[in-house]
Image (cartoon, rainbow over all chains, first blue to last red; front, side):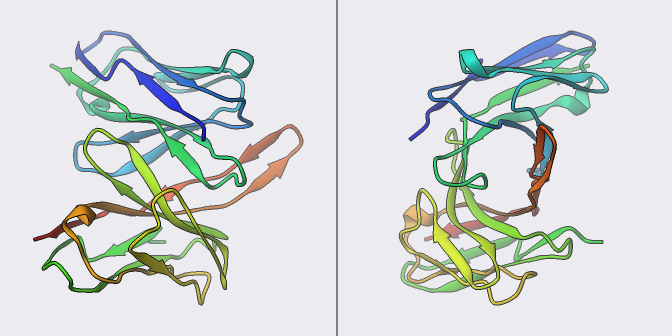
Length: 110
Length: 118
């Protein structure tokens, strides 16, 4: 099956700093999604980003499918950005059979 | 519009007991799935459904059963609980919308069920 690796595993930032999270995947995929899990456990879908770049406020994501990686940029980080960020790609045989990476745990301090 | 509702939020079981985790969605999403989340491992797919009456296995299906009699409901049954099933369980619904050059899957997760098997 497809392997999904995220880096770094942990990240600590001061409020206002920028950061880049990386997601590598082992095989070609036709879509990729980023999720945020807040400290209370709620999972929110951030981006569906099979290729190219998308932006949503202070967050943006870029996927380079030919090189099998995706990047999530967080600019001017806020304490509410804390939590775990996951990327996920579909396993063979179904768009809805997502394979998740282990996540990047982000802590933003005031 | 409640989204995806999971019950219970917390549960403690003894080894060998059975139980059902409930999941309901009110968004008329075609797809529903169950994941478990263990420390340091991200989420792993247990079972999924592409519509009422249709279910299939994910990565880690052993010890779990599902059924999908309606679009709205997708319960997960633990047949005989084991300590290895201690985990946080998430139900998700999603849809597939295809427009020229783009696809969306609209994943919406429930708030999770924290299960401990002793």
